[in-house]
Image (cartoon, rainbow, N blue to C red; front, side, top):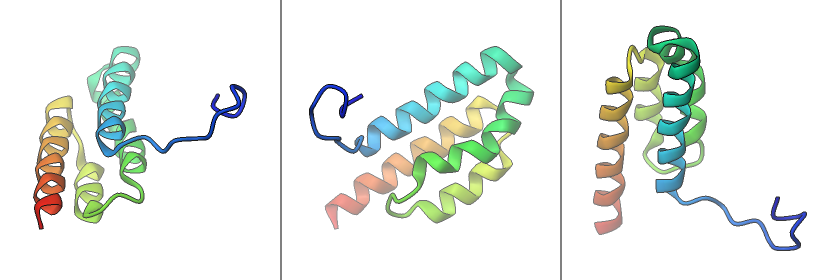
Length: 88
């Protein structure tokens, strides 16, 4: 879209990526039901963290998602880790 509008591409912020992951999971659960949707997210959620700092252990945790609450906990913990990392 940026290219079509003649403006440079801007990488989304970490917070935008994490929020988009949550939104994507919610929409997938609406379409497929929470059980099937979250099992599908096991493979997709880690993509949202690609290239982000401290991501490896959180990506691994995403491979065992069972419900939206599991994802919320992981994303919340990851946000805290990112905040701690900025203070170092």
